[in-house]
Length: 85
Image 1 (cartoon, rainbow, N blue to C red):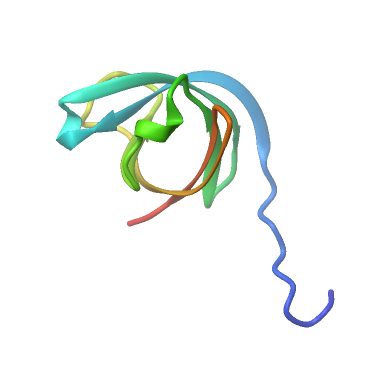
Image 2: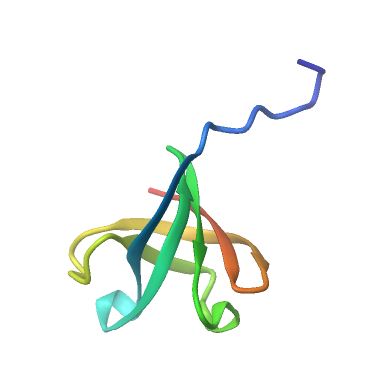
């Protein structure tokens, strides 16, 4: 591997329904998790431009579940997110 290049985590293709929760769980929006890795995911949502920089991604609508995330890129209806602690 060349110096200065970053190896990308292996991603698993999912195409599974999920939920993006905002505002401490008071607002939930459906999404589709296109792919998933240990460090992040690619999701598709109807209106990605209204998403804040920090959100939570879950596979159920229960706001107590899921992982904290930060948006790292936006392209059309797709959003790249990384998991944060």
